[in-house]
Length: 536
Image 1: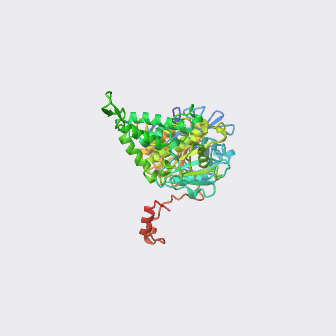
Image 2: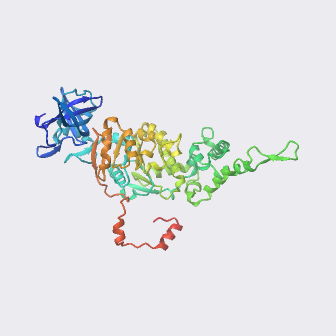
């Protein structure tokens, strides 16, 4: 290390952070090295600290001026808080630090050439998602196995570029022949981004028959937990479903459970519940009838059930025409996993699904993917990535148990990697997403976050070593992200590559449209589409 690159000295040491005071003779924080200007103490930049035969790499997480007393005189000095990120040994970079620099160790500014070894660690994979913000001509290379295989969260305020970031990342792997990605698309944004490699499945048109639901999902759909008879309703409902499944699938009667995805006759189950609800039995004298043991217990349940069965918005689930027998289950899975069209990305369009059942649909699709690989003997050859767009809407934080979707995805977050199922959690309100789920994410792509509550929440999820980086989040440019996790050598600020093509999530240019719009809106046409539930 040359004296020209020296910028300070270590004055304080903890287990994962250092405090360094900038040398008193540095009056100008701009330093020219090999024709490029570097700024001493720029948050997010890197410094090098030689210790014996290794070089410790640290990131500047905070820069400030403090009053110091030197030789009895009070003076202002610049101080850097440094987060330890890795070590260079024999020209090769390693994550983590085995040797903590002692006090009085000199600190040197890191220029592009010094960090070549660091950034080239994962270059062998050839997988890059963008340009490093602080280093010219240097791209951000990741380990894609750890990036996709250990759960990933993409977080950022509205307008920060989340949809473009997700599209850009997924486009880079959608070109491979055995890619398996399922996007749960709440607003129908992603079809445009994958014109040749995806299939678009409108859930309102694709049948997801009721008999695929497990007991927890059926309970959430039909049973009101506030009903004083809810426990009885659940018990009898469960027994009737099992009996119907055994009757329709005699070959599996001895081994099936209420959660086994086999066809059962919902109309038959309903008829028996109606009978129990109105049953009257003859008294001991033979002349006086009295109410049966379940008389009136299912009245509210039947009203709730009938409201679903008779609502045309739920026809895709409760009035299937194609998947009306157990043997059709494999055909449905072939379609979901893109085997019928040889697509690599399946876009589940949930925009036309009633909001009060989105939770159940998300749970059903996620659970089918998890259960499929749970029973797949070749699961290691069939990894699946589930993308949960606008996750805060159905994977909420707080509460003792949460809904069916939250319970399902929490299980996948904790166990999915063993069975080749990984999650990408996408949200503009991370503080409203289940902490259990986000805590299982090993990689974070954090775009601009302006809400202090969300910033604090993300700070808690990250290592204390990098908590100082949270202050940079409000100042990130559109499409620029702070990437932290096991898939990269160190936390990096990256300008994510722009997707080609881009999703249909671009902001509407209000002012330009107000000045002059080429397309005029015809109100009668809108009314007709509204009536016929045709979004066009």
